[in-house]
Amino acid sequence: MIYISRDAHFCAAHKLYNEKWSKEKNEEIFGACANENWHGHNFDMTVTVKGQVDPDTGFVMNFKDLNAIIKKDILEKVDHKNLNLDVDFMKGKLTSCESLIVEFWKILNPKIKAVTNNRVVLHSIKLNETNKNYAEYYGE
Ligand code: NI
Image (cartoon, rainbow, N blue to C red; front, side, top):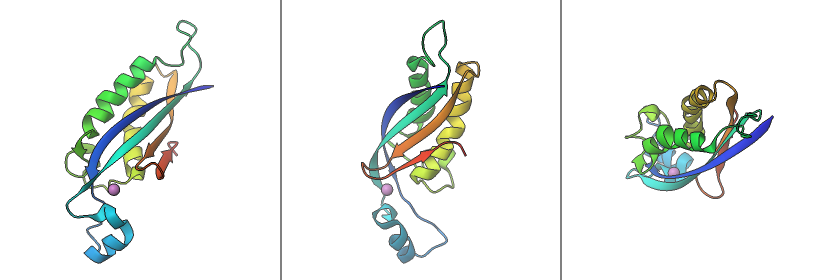
């Protein structure tokens, strides 16, 4: 099994806020991310897929195809957007890195499988919210 990865970057605004809690509790738990007038992050993402090498191309998956899927199905929906208000698949969800990558997985994995005739599947998504904090998801 060979693993290949594509990096992507997007900028987006969000707010972490649980409506069931008081303003004080939200500030205590979410800190600066609870700021009521929003704030932004420069997100860095790594998408890793796995499969066998296609003898016709020498590739696991054409990076051109992987890049096109990430761009159309993720970046065009989240880049320079408000994750709480503008992104259909985040409606009603907390816009944490953890929640984002679970939703990204649901979108990306079927597309990756479709474009490779099920030869290749998503292996992991890593999403950095800052250069020190990140979440990883392996679909489990
Ligand atoms: Ni934040």
